[in-house]
Image (cartoon, rainbow, N blue to C red; front, side):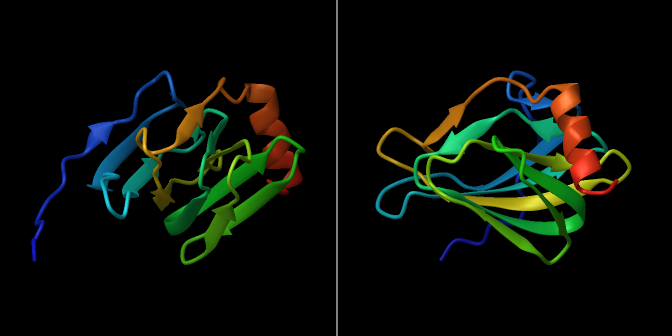
Length: 137
């Protein structure tokens, strides 16, 4: 057994996120399980870039209200206690609403090369505003 009493909070890299986002890594992918978990905190308006995961991703909202959007314009509004599952290969983004902080556990299974994430371009302000409108915000 290993008792981890603290994980460092780090600022998320600006080349993958818009706005202020903070990460607490919990588990890094390693053989044999390759599980990756992080607590991710988004300030209002902050969001990930477009990205996909080779084996999918599960987002469990722990605080606040968040948005998860896909390339076809679908948007899910998720609140604390709710979970959103993104299938393998689906290009998506997630982040806070424009007025509310949001935190989630990001859970995925990595591949032989790491966490299996393919990072893409930023979500534009227009795409984000359209997501807010779709979510009724």
